[in-house]
Image (cartoon, rainbow, N blue to C red; front, side):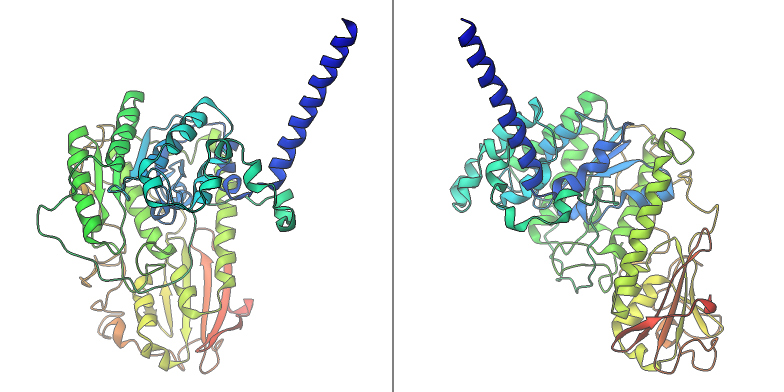
Length: 510
């Protein structure tokens, strides 16, 4: 008997060591993108007040650290590449195992789809790998892989699309030895609280139109899972805000957005149809022609959402809350990340696009009059709201003490009422103008018709500053200096020629 006990005990120890070894190997070999995205979420002990759920449209359009800085909103972006609404539902369910928010914001892209997951299963892993094994994760794997619509339309990559691989991904990543880098041992994590900045400028496709009253019909898989999200949140006492985020819409998207309006009314939840709002500048705010926003567009959407949320829901301002003091340090890391992105830009246009922020003071000296012949340059200057002061073009951000309190009256729906407001109740976004170049409110930015200085014409007529500046820029150059508008800290100084970045501005110029 003792012999059998020794053998049995030895087998158990061997099995335990084998499991531990495989678990360790799995951690080393698996791709770290999911952990990089979710690490700050799991590291926080306190609840998040707002969670954002959706596809890459949301991932690239909502910046939680901007919401923190301007409104004191503690939030996380769970947007995922290719996430169908069924996938989004299970991401939400897994997240709710770890936090209890006051508000769930759900973007409704992919409403018409019958599939539950992305055709690219790596995108599903991105959304789930970091979640620890749990009953909820097991339920997610079993439900998402029961996908008749997917199997009818797709046959590639089927060997990897198994429940076991989603729950334990060693079989997926076991052959990554040759691809391992230092990041696999000590992976970097997001400083954007789940969001993802995409740096490029693209001319968007022309948006479609549909006859009035056209809408998505029937109960698609997307509709069914959207209903499940709303119903589960309401059962938990979590308010829901639906969105259809802005991008060059197709006929399908316009019909989807109209159907979401009906669903929002049915459940008594808030809804913002961004497709119907003149919020973005088509020349400056898109990352690609058909889908995603760059940081200029994302900051406009984020600010709009911040104002709307503070006006319609009882979301606390946590900026003075000791329990969330670490967010100040997180914001400094986020700002350093933004400044690093600025310093990496080699083209004038991308640099100007990234300057679209309420937290920068900017001075631009132009010694190249031909730069005004570049249409995109003029659009970007208008996007910044640059005003002429002497020989410089100046952008003023929010100074110390000017961050938003969220107390502005932006609609009749009171906070905590369940958000039964519509986009008609939503605030105008400060400094943003409209697509038809309607002049903004005085002092809130510039359009093609806005005087750049009293009696001196419009932005399109702006002269170069030759002979009027401090002398820090040479002929044919554009010199830009950037400060933190709250602290006055000099963040960057760049010199551009028509062909690209040529160096740094001397600190003495600051």
